[in-house]
Length: 577
Image (tube, rainbow, N blue to C red; front, side, top):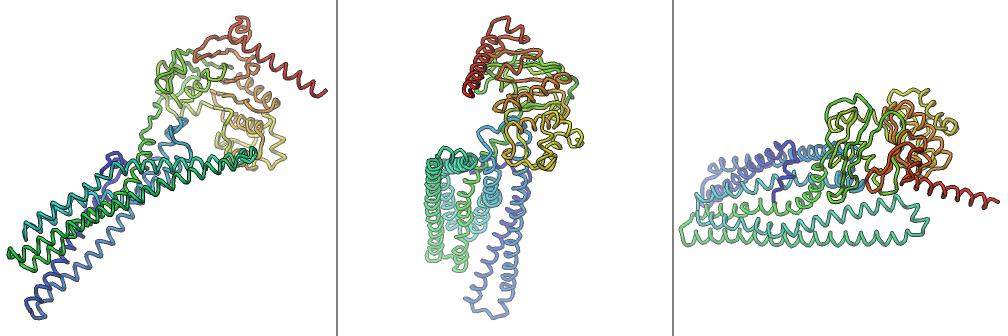
């Protein structure tokens, strides 16, 4: 019932200890109030004069005031604890996401990450503020009560103590089932959120293909699944609560019966018996409250497991050394995503100043190499070195200060053009920005559409795909990097934009280490060196001329692409005629 992984998530556990101490003091105050009430009743039963009631009444009033103070104090400590818990957990999730860097969060997309960091943290707040303090308090309270009651009548105290474990036993009985239910609950919850986000993002396509009705039915099905699992949770909670009520009131009833029997048969003082009867319920209330908090705890624990999974995700290793040379090398690199099938096998590559290209058919391992060079992945075998230093020994911040990556899906932020440039270089001047825009043929477009203050809309909806790619290149140009990786940067854009980008890539290669990954071989014919990949292996390397003369894999692919492009051009010309 106590999850060690969730317990260690909490940095400062002092507030939990404070809540437990205040709860124990409240219990002792309750016992004192009960004792004062029995004292007053005993005085009345004995026919004492009014002045004899002063001390117990004063003590009763003091006890009530203290109990109220302890309740208020407990609430404040819990509120403070809850605030700290949410802040700590969200900070940990945020920091971990940043530390993951370019590495994706496995098994969790944006919608899932958002739900866990918001709703999941809210549920864990209740776990830490309600369940954990109650868990420890419910272990302490029966022992304190037994120690007090056993001095009055050991038979009654023993019966009450024996009945107390029946509540946690009932909780344990449903805990395994509850864990499965809550795990499914969170799975359905995140799945529904993922589906909804997916539909919203792809709403244009759904309308275009008249598929919105079908996807509406899918969302309805997911909503119905979530409703069903929610009802299962509620039924389980109701059944568990009923069982705990029967145990609690049954146990208290058994203790009361033994106390009454003690008065009738064993000569137990009626006032003492009254005290035992009044505190009998106190034996079970802490565990009964624990049972109620248990269901909240299970919900929070399910969310907490996902947070633990994120926080425990393995990070790429980085060191503290500085980059001294921009020469990159892959030395005998093997890589596998699942530990079974190697995506890359014994890959040797060298990237120096100038333009180096990596080509190959889809699935040959090009994108994996990009992720390895960017530090998002680490090789299973072999090494990646930068200036002779292993990549894992370098400072991530220092390495990224030398590295620029432009891909087919480079993100342009929903900010002004100026702000996007300042992300790459906070000290960039307007002259440098305009110079970069001129190089990618965007200067006139920017000037005619609001200048540098023009805001790029979400997902770059207010500019074309070619303009987005050219803007991404311009932003990287002002960053003044030593190493540039172009990962299919000209994919799915117009011929004009492709020509502009490739011209600037060639200019960059005169002063930096440029790595081009492209499916279109016509873009890399001017490269100083070309690596041809097939099935995760380097099958050929050399200049375009050298590879064509070999009449190998590269030559065959180049001839095939060239014939297809010429055939397409001829077809277009015939259509125009």
